[in-house]
Length: 274
Image (cartoon, rainbow, N blue to C red):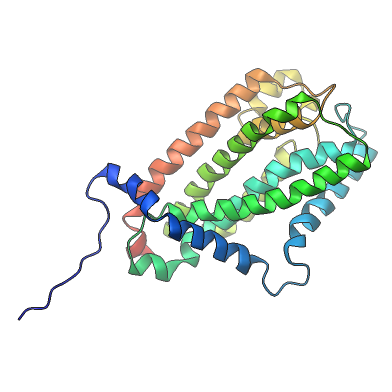
């Protein structure tokens, strides 16, 4: 008697793929929780690293841009200005670095069973979001230290957090898919992050950019994300360059849509290439 074979395959239609994302939600939770635990396991400071890194960067930027260069702080203490920019940047850079190697780090899982591969880089964004929440407590501490009370605009902060997550997800999908096909992308990502830190308004306000270059500068999607964060957190002199923000927002959605499209296009070859 011929033995029966069990064939595990993805949904037969494109619509079933998105249903599979919901069916495999427990795998998503497991991967995210596993990465959160592993990330700080057997470290001296543990999750405090999520506070130490942005805190040190904040000090450096405050000294260089605030004390030496004397750049404007939009009516807020300069450390708060910097940290309000560090939060979305840390979320983006961490998602980019973790998402870029997420598929490669799960080679055995991907090569053996079927599940929507989109779950893997998405779970790495959640890990970065946990770091974001931890770092957010330091921002609250800075506000208390400087007796800084935000305005009503703080109510719009969840919207800008969502935009930051979408930006991180879109970029992470591109890097994750490219890293499977071209392994040298693991060397390119740190360079992109380092360069992006200095060309994005993390350590300074984008208002220092000359007016004639503001529109061009907004082609960097992170400019709109960081400006939005600062507009929501700071008060007084903090103004949002709405035209540039609209361009950045459009680029964020383009990045996300193209990232999903490219990832889905490459997804069928992951198990063979990886």
